[in-house]
Length: 155
Image (tube, rainbow, N blue to C red; front, side, top):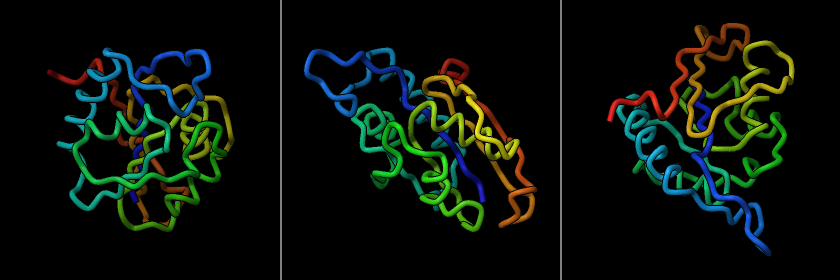
């Protein structure tokens, strides 16, 4: 299984009376999402399952990919890392899954995959961390296949 963690692009601060879920991407965030979406689209298998948090900023980020996706409430801000791993059926899933979500949860998932511990790792906005398994279903065979930042993607 491949598991790709994609943090949403840069978003505006919450305005008065605005909920965290309503925050939209900034102009810079829209450019970041387009760049990373193009790169991911060129790398992902057609069969990759795509799951997104219901927050506006994650929906705007994943829409830049130009593929069908499913909104998953367990990926909302403040989600527990274990909820994300359950949502993607880690490590038992045989297909690739792309998760579009938030900090600190994505960083915690990344640290759990690499170390087995729930640590506070930082995944930069609009960046993607791509994990793979050498042996399907074996969490001990996990390795970090790629880390890509939107500002590294060639225009």
